Image (tube, rainbow, N blue to C red; front, side, top):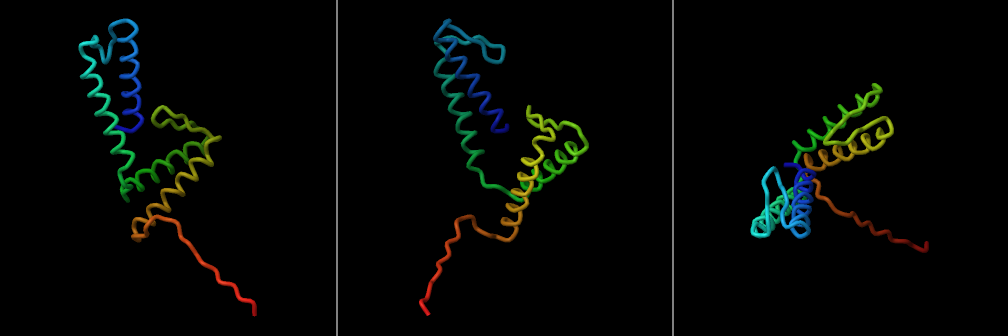
Length: 132
């Protein structure tokens, strides 16, 4: 499941909880839930939150970089051909071209960093002046 799908499930469960409070019942994936099910709903919501957190904190891999670079190239080609490109309910058009290119450049840099074992972080340089 993607982060977006997990967030949608969490949002749906929160709406279910609101409906149970307001109406005394609510529906989730075709099943009727009442106050008696509130502990299961909270448990399921926590499970989705944990999975979302795991995905967010998961380190980036070279394979994921390659996948995202391929996605960006595909989207860039479609947009340059004058077509829209749709990905996870998001429509990319010519107006999004600079975002697509910057995303592709980001993943190319990250792939290079991972392949060469370069650690992330801020580089600090010290400059010494002289009064000569």
